[in-house]
Length: 319
Length: 305
Picture 1 (cartoon, helix red, strand yellow):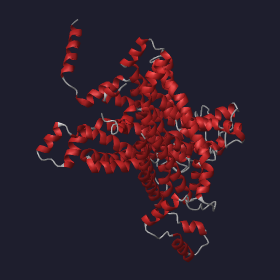
Picture 2 (cartoon, each protein chain N blue to C red; picture 1 turned 60 degrees about the horizontal axis):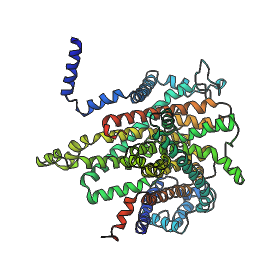
Picture 3 (tube, each protein chain N blue to C red; picture 1 turned 30 degrees about the horizontal axis):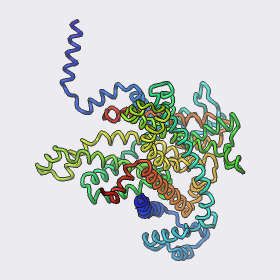
Picture 4 (cartoon, each protein chain N blue to C red; picture 1 turned 90 degrees about the vertical axis):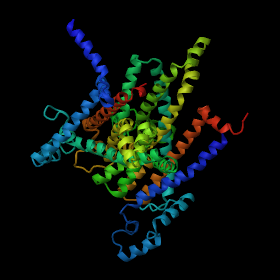
């Protein structure tokens, strides 16, 4: 088991280097000249050229990439043009807010999506099943940011119970302001998780071992939780993990709608002021978050699926 | 009595004449009412975008300039009425007109970007699946790296760096989808790669390119089409998202997402601006998804749960 985990963590390194390479390459296509942005419009050609040399902007692409990675490893992501402070500080200040929002959304999609899928599958073709699956179809087709707008209209303007924007103070304040944005992000993944759970449960429900368990007189609740859900869970874990990327992308939109002080909103601000190091830093941070979550999902997988665990035990237990 | 006999006879005849994969799939698709409804709605949207383009061409942009983009301040933020059934936006422009004229952006960008992704992903996936081994390993690991960047985040990075011309927008939506389509193409190429007809083609001396494009791809097409049609919906969501953030299609073009971007400021006074365009996006994506699901069930009944 440990061998598997270590192997997966080591595989993370080339993936991250590749991710940063792609992002760095894309941002490098930008026509914005950092030296000009730093010096402002009044600067002469000469001083711009001097600063370009000083910043190492004339170096070959891979030299600059290597330098960026080395700096990044030491926690340095360059300096924001607008704030004149290290990008890493800006990101670290906002990271907890984005993580809070994203993890609440994941929690919601698991806590609501899985039971919804289980009940829908157990009562296949019932009114509950049909209605909830239609709602899920709509939920996964609606644009995230629009759901945010609609929730604000409903629960902040028509019935003013939750704040429409920014983050509250204190535990209850934060919690109250978390409700609308986290639901906004979660709705589409609740829909996906519920549909995946339902489909996967339906496959398990007719298995012989379920009949066996029932014949033995196992209580129905235990059959559902032990015999069905546990076997149905593997595709669900995959869908939760894959959804996290959609969710992070959604957080950029949702944070903009709700003026939530996270990385997503920061990246949009930075785009508007052409603050390239900040955009680069945010994109790298979001991608690293996604990669780490995918790793966690893969490890979780190994715990949920004994077949994966068995692959790594074979070497030791050869009878 | 006679008629019934004839019917039975024709049914038997039908069963004898095998219909071929596509006719067979169409037959099954037709029976799926929900999927047909989705497809009909998508077709209506296609007709709307072509019709508005033709109108612009015939009237030399007169309607576009006078009704879709021209400000009309007396009607500013007017709610839905008989004259303007969806109301007016913050410049007094009729929302129904803007929605109709905006259809082309979502459909065009959604479909063309997925076609680009299909060509790119299809090429890489076909090579990986056909040759296997090291080539496969290298291509798919690179695709994995691309997959580890959330698609919306990559789209934002591309648009920021390259600017938001239509071509760059297409690219920003297409690139994140390339690895997803490459995976599908690879899997379906692998599933037919070792079949007899490929061996036969090789025996008569066909080269690899001919084998891949003439024999393998056409036989591996069904899952690829399904996946592509399902991805168009998410491409439309992405383009709406980018426009909503103000980095997609530039105003005053009536792209659905950019109508919503403007709507945010006026939410307190005019709910209809923020609700109606979103409903339009949702119904469009829903129809595409339903049609895509129907296509999947029709092409591969085994995949239906």
